[in-house]
Structure formats: structure tokens, C-alpha cells
Image (cartoon, rainbow, N blue to C red; front, side):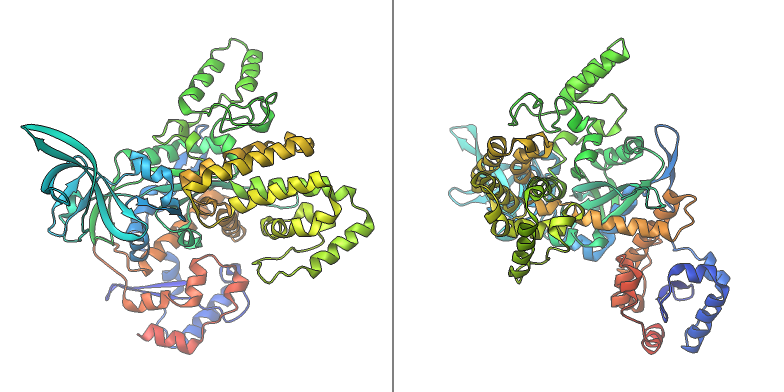
Length: 632
């Protein structure tokens, strides 16, 4: 990868060349390879700088991720949330795709259709701009045309959009003059056209943020330690856009400390973005705006969610992180956990005079007495971490059921089962079951269980009792709920009954599964979907796949300071993508049209989207085409 900056024309040129099957380490390690690369480029007519000049080159305006200290004074590196927000809002592609106002929807299909975005005042847009340039804020007294009484006065309550109409609406409490008394009539609505002829110095833009916390896989067979990783996503993007790797923004990682030791700098930045905001350039308005970025939710699997909430997990008497259900209780919904009650319980644990007393009370409450700065940010994490369906249903319930059933099948039945799977019509499936389900189901991944959950009721029913079939049928209904693409709020009550029916069937017919805490977690699924929309909007698959990109950067590093090297690499990639999409850098500079055209090519898109090198080498740059692009 060579980055050539022409100082005379202030244009950036990007050249990517892969003539042979080689990985990046070959270019760094071999001087001969570098000389051959320079010779080939010169033969193609490319005006290349000296190799030493390229090694010294830095992207204009790029600020390296700062070094911060954990609560235990261990160093790690964090990409600033302000810089990520600035680059994303400065990109025309992303800023135009962001939803900026709550959307009232009959059918929930996106994250911003959920109840939390529409009812929580933290996500409400405080203002809009009329076509004449006038700024209208919430709680302003305005004159408007009422359909019944004509011109009326009222107080602006909120701004919103409709799923069926992309135009902007506002809700106004009407003030009616009746015999010299002003009466407040709530609930009026009027249409407000959202123009862009704006006085930009006071425009406020709310951009909801999603944090994802995952650890990369690590075991004794791998020579690299696992990393605790933090990613940032934007809730205003659609499910389709948020699943793209370029919209998952790396923030930090480390392999030397626990996740709670990393929370102090991240909590400080989250609080700053929500309470004070940051002034950035918005490509949608083409001017500076004040961005407020409240935290919408945190995506992580069950053990990591327990860590973030100071919860002991399944080993505690009160094993659920959503409510206070006890090991001795029937698994049903109890009083929900809140931040205030949790902090009170932690304070009670701290007041115990002996370590034995602290341990006993900690197990009773199901909480750990450890420093956690995320418990003090404006967002309430106990209401911001939804059920994670990948590990709860696919790698949880589906896997548990197979563990219960497979040992009881004879060799003849297993042979017949495999024949039934091969004969099953998979034409409507995105994935198929890989490998021998009878012997290898313990090593199945999410896509295998996703295909298996859809066919299991047809394949396994001849080998199950009527009671086991009832459990499996209710399990597949839960799977259908979890992986639906859209739903209506009127379906919620019926779906909650189906989840309760599943837990009841497990209790009555397969009580051995009750010891699995994920069975109870299913009872909280529908509530999370009401708050955040379909579970695919907050699914973990995209973040799990992005973990491979983090590990790939460590493979091609020297592994002496992985937190710094990985953060520097992702910061460079993010900033390079920002420049190539036409973002403004160095106050008023943009890249040339030639670089933007080159950025749209398949090979550059694959590189900046972290596609593996073997996939990248499937499409080759032709030197002739490269010469034409560089000459333009």
C-alpha cells in the first residue's frame, strides 16, 4: 500500500498493487520485494516518490490514538469517540443515511422504530429548521395553521417522522383563547418542511450511539492472547447499513487487563458526548453542527454483559441480570434490576466488616464489589443491554436440546437421521448444516444452528416422544420470534405468551434444562424487541465476524504493543476512508476526483473493508488500468 501526496496540487493518490500471492509482511521484510515493486510501478508510468519518503509519510490531519491508563495504571490506546463521530458525520455517504428524528412506525423493522428511541427524551431531537432559515426548538411558542380553528398558537412538544412519510412532523400542545383564559389542548400535529437554508452555528443534531463489547477467541492452541475489544456503531443507520464492516468502528482493545479496567476513559468520553456534545462538520447540512450522541444500547454476549453490570452471572443465587429471580424460584419474571438499587446493594456489600460477610452478601445479591465507571454514565446500562440471541438461542437453547437428545439415539437412528438431512430440500435456506450433526454438533457455529433450528422439527420428530416434540416445537417458535425481520406491537402479547409456554414446557417435560440460565433469559426477549426493534437490529453476528479483522492486524504486527499497533492501524484506515469519501481535512482541503474514483474500485473497497488477503487477491489490478487512473 503506497500513499502518494502531491503537495503542489493538494491531491491524494492511492495505489494498491498485488501482482503475486503475497502478504504484507513480505513487503516489509524484503528489500528485494520493495525494489521490484518500485520497478514495476515505474514501468507502468507511475511517478513514485522515494521509498524513504513513503515510509515517513503521514496522513494530513491524522491524530494517533492517545495512550491512556487503566484504573490499575496499565497503558492501552483508545481512538477518540469525538474523532470517529467527526469523520462519520463528515462523510457524505454516512451522514445522509443517518436517521435524525424518531420514527413512528406501525411495523417495527429498524432499531430507530423501537419504543426506547421514541419515548426516551435523551434521544428526542431538540430542534428543526424551517425553509426560511428559522430555528424551531422544543417548548417554543409558535403560530400554525390548525385544521379546525385556522391560525392558532401552541407549544412545540417534539419532532418526529412517520414510517410511511419521510417528511418531518411535530406535535404541538394548542393554546386556545376561551373567554380570556388560555386552555392547553395537547396532541395537535402539523407538518414542518425541513429545509437546509440554515443559520448553522446553532443547529443541534442528536446521533444515537451503540457500543459493542466482545472478546476475540483465545485458547491454548493459539499463540495469540484474546483481546477485550470495544466497537462503536450508530443507531440511526438501517440494519443493512449497520451490518457492513465499514460501519463498525474500532475504538480500543487490549490483552493485558480486564474489561472493567478499561471503562474509565470510555465512560468519560460517553458522558462528554451526551452531556456537552461536540461541534463537527456535518456533510448533510454542509456546515458545523453541535452533535449530541446518547448511548442507545450495548451489544455483548451474556458473560460480558454480567461483567459490565457487576453481576456474578449464573453462579449467583439471583442469576438473572435483568431481574431478581432466585435459584429457588420458578423461572418467571420478577422485579427488574435498576441502577439505583444495584448501587445501594454494592454499598451494603462494602459496609460488611469481614471478607466472609462481603462474599455471602455478594452471592445473595448476585453482584460484585468492583470499580465500574460505566455505572455512572447518563445511560442506565441495566436498561441498555438487550438479550443477545446468537449465544442465547442458537448457541444456547438449540445446542442444549441436541445435547439432551443425541446420546439416546442408536447408531441405526443416527444413520437414518443423516439420510433425512441429506434428503431435506435446502433451496430456501441461506446456509446449510455443515458436517455430521450426530458427532460434531458441539463444534457447530451460529450459521449451522440457524439452519438446523429451521429443519429440526421435521427431521427429529420420529425419534422424540410427544413431550420432547412439544418442547422442540415451542423452541422453534421462539427461534422464529428472535429472527423475524419485522413485527407489530400488537404481536408482543402473543409472543410473550409463546416464550412463557416454552419455559413451562421445559419445566414440565425436560426439567434438566432448567439449570441453564438462558432458558429464563428468553422471558426478557420480547421486552427487548419492543425497546429496540427486531433482534437482527442488535445482533452480535456482525461484531463476532469483525473480531477476525482485529486478530488479523495482530498477526501482521510484532505483538510487542498490540493495543497501540492495532489502534493505530484502524485509526489510519478510518481516516483514509474519510478522506477518500470526500471528507474535509486540514480545515478546507478535499481529495481530488481521481482518488474518489479509485476508492470506488472493488479492490480498494475490499481492502478498506477488511476482506482477507486471499479474497483480495481474487481480483487483480491491471497495470494498464492503474496507469490510466493515476494519469487522471
